[in-house]
Length: 156
Image: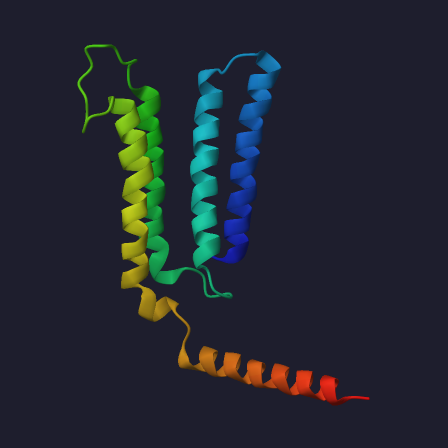
């Protein structure tokens, strides 16, 4: 996945969110399809932002494709489970001290990706970090910038 694909996903996700909002404002109520459109738009926007944060140049995300796909599926499944679950009652069982829907959102959609992403970045660091050639290019650009700055300061 490249930067342009991530930007396309970001625009698509934000568009889906906007469509859901317009649908709610136009009808005055949230129909089930608007809720699903909003959920897919939110998940897609989250994925696109992760990809934009990880992509370097034109190389894409290479080894992060599988972890990102897993997190996207986790988001879709988690949000879908929350939308499909029956309403909770006072007799509902608690999951780790929370009502089931809240537990899925907090633990499954919030905390689990927060734990998975750093692991994915750690395992792919060597292939995704700056190479020796990249570091040499940055050093050369720094030396060129400093030389230009000194020349400008010494100019009459």
